Image (cartoon, rainbow, N blue to C red; front, side, top):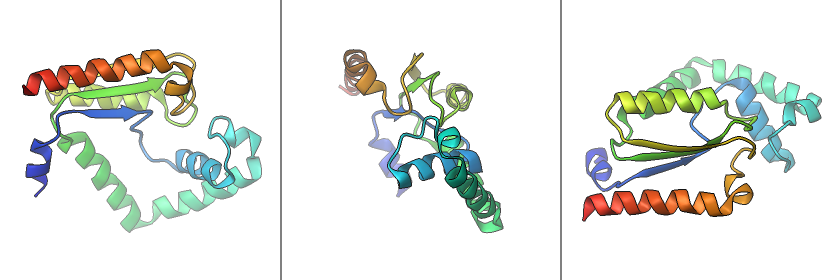
Length: 153
């Protein structure tokens, strides 16, 4: 059962997430992945595929069954995520996931009593923090893992 699994989780590390799901975010992320390009600047660099993708995702996310499921998943994550320590790694320069979505989620987790740690870079792109700051990224992970493993000992 889910409760048993949750008890085995010592910590959660989240890179460049979470976010509300919008047609624009979905179009940017999926469209960029489909074309094999960076999501940063995708909407401006590829206006025709971006417009088509936004239309498709707007329709899809508007379907009652899909919107109900998306809301349920987002609500469950916000209210039922494991109460173990969480580390968020993100950037102000991420053009895919709005920094405010991540910060709002972190505040919600803190309000649930979760120990939240974070590292926010100013200029690394979406999921590019390790490439941009390998030493600092590794230090964040090492420190977090040491903290959660020392709590369990």
